[in-house]
Amino acid sequence: MDVNDLRVAVTVFSFVLFLGLVADTWNRRRKHEHDEAANLPFSGEQDVNEPRGEKS
Image 1 (cartoon, rainbow, N blue to C red):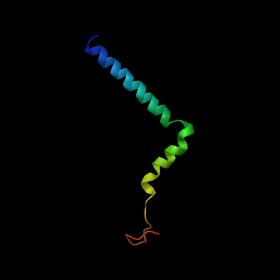
Image 2: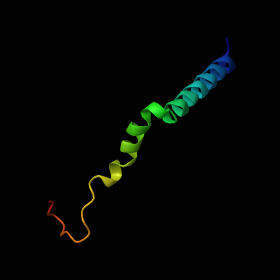
Image 3: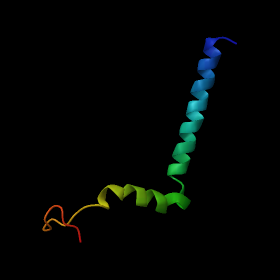
């Protein structure tokens, strides 16, 4: 076994991991979780008319 065999193994492993992540992302059973995660940046927004520092 030489260095090139190790490189091939790491490349194949990385590709399989990538395909697994793509399959997990496009899985319909996890859509609700992904939608919630996508809206996290907007969950702490304040009202435009509300003065800074005051939260309702």
